[in-house]
Amino acid sequence: MKNYFSRRNFIKLSALSGAALGLKGITPTLSKDKILEKIDNLSSAPKQIGKSLIEFSVPPIKQVKVAFIGLGNRGIEHLQLVDSLCPEKAVITAICDVQQIKVDAAIEELKKSGHGQNPKVYAGTLDIWKEMIKRDDIDLVIISTPWEDHTPMCVLSMQHNKHVAVEVPAAYTFEDTWKLVNTAEETQRHCMMMENVCYGDEELWLLNMAQQGVLGTLTYAECAYIHNLRELLFSKDYYYNMWRIRHHMNRDGNHYPTHGLGPVAQYMNINRGDSFQSLVSMSSFQASLDEYSKQIESTNEFFNKSGYKHGDMNNSLIKTANGKMILVQHDVVTPRPYNRINALAGTKGYHEGYPSRLSLVDKGHKWLDETDHNQLIEKYKHPLWDKLKAGIEKYGGHGGMDFVMIYRLIDSLNNGWFLDQDVYDAASWSVVIPLSTLSIELGSAPLKFPDFTRGRWNENRELGILKNY
Image 1 (cartoon, rainbow, N blue to C red):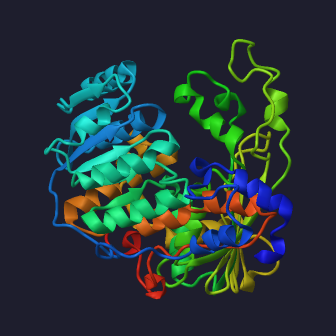
Image 2 (cartoon, rainbow, N blue to C red):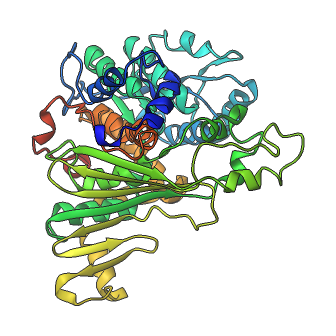
């Protein structure tokens, strides 16, 4: 990495805020060698305090007692889906949001469903959630708040003996990724990042095919979060305190990698026989937010504001320990149509999403026709989508993947199974955020991934979604 380290990058890095990268102790007074030492140490695992949570499970919880922190856009959706499983599989015991209007809306939703939910209500202050998690009638806390709040809320909830399920990303600094892992191991509590795309019909079908060797030996993937959010980013109502656009003001990199990367990590057995090893990241210059900010209402805080740090397009390349390569893209400001790409290449086949297309080596150099494609869909479709068909049609959520995710989370706790996504997945997928930021700041330098499993990534293990259902 020293070949990439210029005086200009040294000055830039020294000026980075600790809050942005989660790097303690980097100041302009440190020498270049000391800064390089701190960066190299990012990939080193701290001393383990608790026990490994690989394939960790707890005794069956026949009726999971659920509490919610955050009842805005995603929180209210998760609440409705958990409510759909009440009272047979779960019960909602407490809800919390800083805004009273959000809590009131949640109570009205629960009344309409007629499932008899009567949760205790916490609202009005930024710290009220800390009172809620002290309750002894909570098994699971579901967290749907701004990104910077995810880790503190997960950590304190686990320290109060609660399992946690948190919206994506689970963490956005180096320090926070290790806090999640260390706290989960020390408390022996589940910490699952709710990556809903891993439960999509297409993604589970492709996972099934990849695991059964239809695509042969996997070598390469492309994935993305391409979603034009300009209007929502500048909305004064959609994101509480406009928290999301503030990240674009403060840092470059891939802010939101997990929707595309999560499924790919599962296709490639990451943390279950392979691991993310290194990353290189670069961004285009920024233009879209500068231009769009001139079109919004003059009363908006961000009217005619410029100087956003996040480039319009970020490309990050990941190399795995076993030599696979993954391209991860992030673009939420240009007019590109929504796309997660979902491309997966192997020695016998290649898949590309949006729309789903498949090419197999014994079928020539072209996409399969509709008949052959549909035959493979029927042959390798994950059984959960048939098992949960009625619930998917009734409750939906991003085409049904949200319902499948919530059902799987609760059902796994009901049965005492290990979860489909564990804390090591949450940390490995989320750490792309600070790694990409730091790589860019160092002139697109290659950086090593931390090994959150502490050496156990090379154990071949089957995913829960393919084993228990």
